[in-house]
Amino acid sequence: MTGTTKTPRERYRQQVREEVKEKAWQQIAGSGASALSLNAIAKQMGMSGPALYRYFANRDELITELVRDAYRSLADAFIEADAGGAGRPGLAGLAHVLRRWALEDPHRYFLAYGTPVPGYHAPQDITAIAAELMAVLLDACAGAGPAQDAQSRALEDHLAAHREWAASHPDAPPAALRLALAFWSRMHGVLSLELAGHFNGMDLDPALLFEAEVEALVAG
Amino acid sequence: MTGTTKTPRERYRQQVREEVKEKAWQQIAGSGASALSLNAIAKQMGMSGPALYRYFANRDELITELVRDAYRSLADAFIEADAGGAGRPGLAGLAHVLRRWALEDPHRYFLAYGTPVPGYHAPQDITAIAAELMAVLLDACAGAGPAQDAQSRALEDHLAAHREWAASHPDAPPAALRLALAFWSRMHGVLSLELAGHFNGMDLDPALLFEAEVEALVAG
DNA sequence: TGTACATCAGTGAACGCGCGTTCACTGATGTAC
DNA sequence: TGTACATCAGTGAACGCGCGTTCACTGATGTAC
Image (cartoon, rainbow over all chains, first blue to last red; front, side):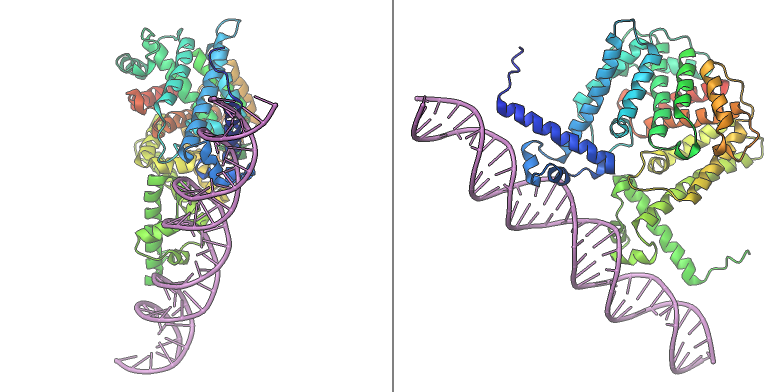
């Protein structure tokens, strides 16, 4: 009981907000994020358009909420995997958590990591959630092997001096920072191509490409 | 002279079409592809809205043309690099051609490889251009080394039986197919994160990450 | 338990906007003899 | 070289639509005494 006792009205408010967001996701799934329309959501809920302004100040606030929820749910999935009893998940484990999360709702993935919605800029608390994510990832990268080639060494030198983004791990070796970036970039590469349907006409199993990329990454 | 003699009217038509596309790119740069508006383009050109229907059947046809031009220009850049006098460009060379092309116009990159425009499906001749691109890439992957791990071997086995997408190279070894996919996916990973601005707040030089990914890929 | 008042969810009308697209029309440019 | 006709670029009005957002209002739900 941390003072979160809810009056019936508060409970109801929250319930409606949730339903709005649910319909919003459905609409995004159908026509993309930039076509999100408050009026259309209201109609789908059997309400008049202006009613939604009781729940969201405007369209932008709704989008922000959706983006926040997206990051939050991925961060939670990472943290949960990290806290799972039988030892740390490792990079491969996180990769599979990420893939499952992405396939669960491709549009949610793109809202977080896809082409930026034009004219929209994420507020700071979302950046903070992204940092939580990065912290779990950096944990899993702790055992990174040394750089294998000149360019990787150059990157590590650079990262040793530019590591504010990894503020949660001030003592992580540059190799860990490098590995975390490689994880992020490579997983995003396969996943975003797959989710965008770029493998569609190719009669190819994206899961196998994903697995190969994961193993190549872990093997270093 | 291959019968391409143009009447003044044809020349003018083509000129206006080019100008429309030019303004379209500017508009996409400002507000994203899904906000592309024929009326707005017309206004910017000092014409009335309906005038554009002399040049494009509708909005979709204009978008298709832009997508086609995007793929065409990248394919040309690849082919030109491939035909350059001093030997084949190699994977690293192609990687740099790709990066230069992407940075030249980020929105063009996203129109081709980003989140799909909802409700839009590319016509077949664009698929053919994508195949030209793939052919150059497969050439550069000819000398691929053997798979280093179990998952990569599994992927190669799969590709040996699913290689229609590489129809231009029916005799390429599975290792080459695997390398081409890895190239595509990894380069897309770094580039799309960079262009979407996901490294922005991180005070980090994306070029170094890119170089490291290229060398890791080539070293295999 | 009942009454008086405050809070708040939701409505319907309205504003101004921009969109894609069609249509009948004007006026300039090109073509045929 | 001049005239008659066909072609075609561009206009302005119009249609129907959906958008985000504001505003004054009704009616239900909760609160205080």
